[in-house]
Image 1 (cartoon, rainbow, N blue to C red):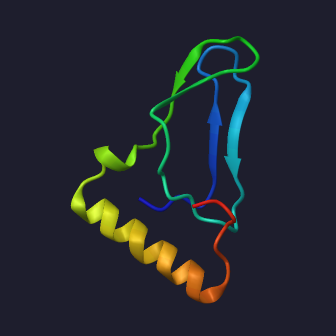
Image 2 (cartoon, rainbow, N blue to C red):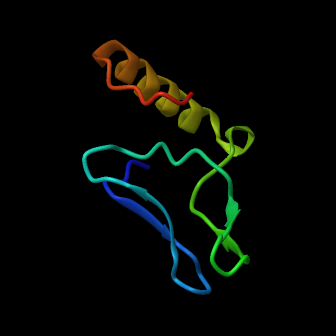
Length: 78
């Protein structure tokens, strides 16, 4: 579930839509699809919305966020 480097490219025009640098882990929480600002077409992601996550995924996310808050490395967004 943890990925060290996450890059989401548009499936149609290969435009970079999102990147998580190597030193930060991606929670994989987010929309299943996004609209590319370059070609205006929908592209699927490998992410899940909160309601789609199973109990283990929610527990992992909660523990990850709690650790980030304790260490002071939590991003500014929720």
